[in-house]
Length: 225
Ligand code: DX5
Ligand code: ZN
Image 1 (cartoon, rainbow, N blue to C red):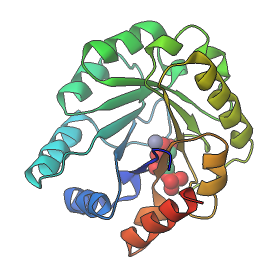
Image 2 (cartoon, helix red, strand yellow; image 1 turned 90 degrees about the vertical axis):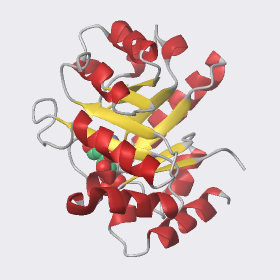
Image 3 (cartoon, rainbow, N blue to C red; image 1 turned 135 degrees about the vertical axis):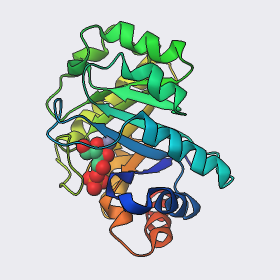
Image 4 (spheres, protein in one colour; image 1 turned 120 degrees about the vertical axis):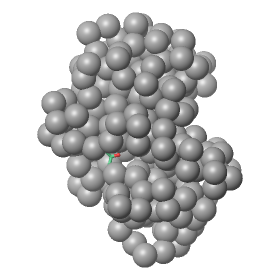
C-alpha cells in the first residue's frame, strides 16, 4: 500500500485537555499532529502560538511519542513565526503564499531552521505559485475548505486541483507530499486519495467521535481499497 499519513487536526480537540486528547488521537493511529495557527488577521479566528506548540511537543516526548508536528500557519507576517515554531518542535511548517511578501525567502527560512517546508493553497489560490519553487518544497497542502474553521464541508472542485498538483509533483521528480485539509471524512477519503493526496488532515471527523481508533481504522481501510 502507498505510504499514507493521517494527521488529526487538534483544532477540533478539547483545548482544556489538549495534551491528553492529542496523545489519544496518536495512540489511536494518527501519524502526524496537525497544528493550526490562526491570527484573526489572515483568517477570522484565533488559535495557538509557539508556546503551546512547545508545551505540546514536550508533553508528547514525555509520553514517549515521537511523531511529527505539522504547523499550518494561517497568519501574517510569516517570517517572524518560522524560527519560533522551529524551536518549538515543528517538523513541518507550511504557510499561505498570499501571507508572505517573499515566498522563496520564507521557504528558505523554514529549511534553514531544519524543518520541512510547504505552501498552502486555499480553494481559490492559483497553482502558479508553484512555478519557481518546486525544488524547495517538501509538502504541498491543498485546502478543501476556506481556512479558519473546522467542521466545514469538502469543496468538490478540490479533487480536480489535486489531480493537477499530483501531475506536477510526478513530473517534477521531487519527493513532495500532497496534503489535503478540510472536510476529510471516512466516506470521501478514498476518492481524495484516488485524486492524488497522500497526507490527510482530519479534525472534526476524528475528534467529533468518541472512538478515535474506529474512525482512523475505517479511514485506513478506505485507503487500502
Ligand atoms: C481549517 C483548518 C483545518 C481544520 C480542518 O482552517 O486548517 O485543519 O481543522 O477541520 P475539519 O477536518 O473538521 O474540516
Ligand atoms: Zn489546517
